[in-house]
Image (cartoon, rainbow, N blue to C red; front, top):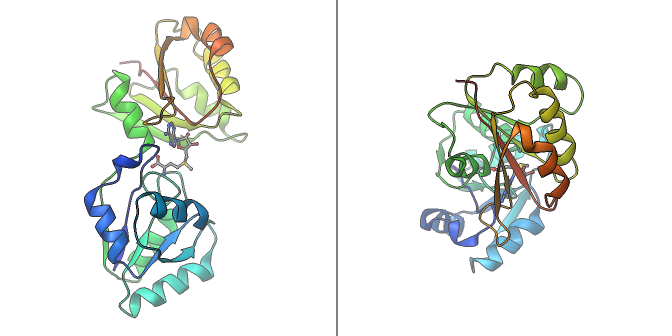
Length: 224
Ligand code: SAM
């Protein structure tokens, strides 16, 4: 069986009892970065495990190897560096191959950065549009233009290197909607967690003064 196991996005205490039990009883763990997962097991005081590294969207040979091991009756866990495997990381490739092979899969519930950001945002979250990371070049401007008329709350991930540039682009694209609210969630669940509420009208000021270190989720109010 393949168990999909979410791991904390910052605060280690967000690991679930079920996740700990599953990581303890499995035969091996499929992970992105063996050092990150090794450190996690150590900090959680879980037993050492064999690691199968899987870090590319095109790691076909490795996916075959994983399927073979599951066919032999092994119990494998799939984790990513943080959060829910498959959410903006290569995990879904493994799940799709294992499902195509007709093998048993269980998915454990757990943390994901965009869900934490949405729930803290105070914006309407009965419907939302999750975009992962925005495209860097092709299709980027077209996508940003659609934000002008998107009725649902929009949520996406951004890196510290690009956060200021992206926010500045948003301030320009949405300048006709100065009252629209934007939430910048930084370092969620960590010691330096910060959740900034801004209006499009004030965004340029926020960009000048904000801390750009760490990991970011951006949430934008829909037009409804
Ligand atoms: N699988 C992960 C999940 O379920 O959230 C996402 C993996 S994606 C490669 C990593 C991105 O998620 C980061 O660049 C950042 O945008 C966002 N992220 C992860 N942890 C975060 C945190 N603690 N605070 C804010 N954003 C976070």
